[in-house]
Image 1 (cartoon, rainbow, N blue to C red):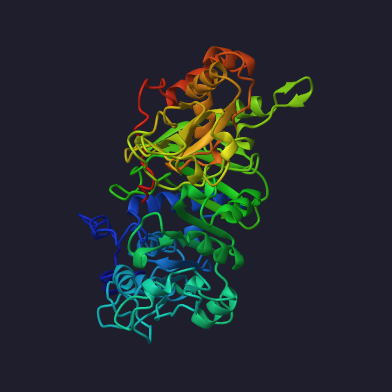
Image 2: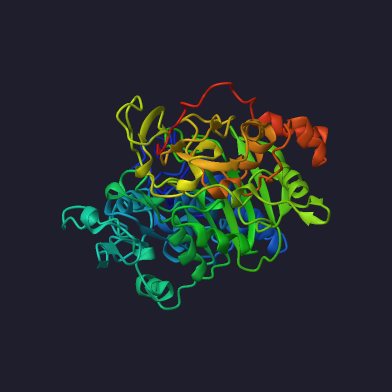
Length: 543
């Protein structure tokens, strides 16, 4: 029979009205608090996978399972796990206080990312910032920290950068009074030894779950073009610990790689232990007011899983299309929309005279095609010895030909230019690319543009521009374009077709056998090419 006194234990974790963890503001774009609703979706996904792998067993009724949030902020994951365990273990442990003590002392563990978040997590979990305080719900801890560890960690500087996370010494080597943002989980050469130091030699976690810091830059508190992604380091450290399951929510930029993420992307796509991936491609759908370009996704990794991953797309909190089990490494980047894979398969498998088509990405220029950055010349060619027309950021001007330091032989060719950054800060991007510029002989461009291709005549150049305006081409670019930035790699899925004719969408759909359903899908995502938007250049407006 239950002890009535114990039923009055202050620990309840019942729903609060309002739940304080839905009301706190984010620390920054880097360290984002997870909404309780999202945390519970991830826990539901975890429980379903556990049941599927353990003959229908209830994860929350297992008193031996150990959970770790190695980058806890608000403590929401640990709190919600504890809430479920309190209910799930009630039959095995009828005494509430005994049950609470067991769960909090033997099953639930966390590592705070800052001193502030460690206190917040303890308050969420233990109802006291001191685990051994008189008001703490667990009775038995001998330390204030309990199982929520935090200790100030220092960066290891070499040549102005941290050897572990790449942080700038100039920015973050700032004395005892301020946070270092040197996260303990990734500042070690041996994560298993580090965990043993923190929680004991016999500590093996079954589940690692949470929402890691995303990036470092501007002091660890701001985004911007200089920010360096670090969430990949947390993912890799968690995998090295070999738990049964890992579930995290991370930015989706790794799908296509980019700054510091190419090798990580390759490892992730080739790892067949991913069970489920839920993708939110639209800005603000998960974290309102937090600009994480390219969206975010949460996923489940299973140590004993080998095979396809179930991929689900969410937009405005609704499932779009049907979840599909597929291999993540079918292409060199992750194609995030399930409906797009069949279309891309048709394009990539197309053969003409038994040979695959060349890729437009192989002929697109690298950055700074003419060796020029942001130069702006004169408004007219008067007084310039050998003037050429320069296309720059929302302007045209004249410079001397001698200023061109790369690809000087392109100056007198017909060519197609496209801006290398396109899009807005809104939720949707239906145009994907800027307006193609037909640049004739005697022209060059700054780094605002990439040279998409060289042509033998004006008519060929105009055909090329028409091709780049098609919905079909812009759809193929969209499969690799996660943010505003567009590189030569973004054009890798686009066929390099002969430009001796005008290509229309109807021609391209017929050439590649695109069905009416697939056409409707493409045209639901990609708008008609606006007649004039060449000035829409938004070069480094990152999160």
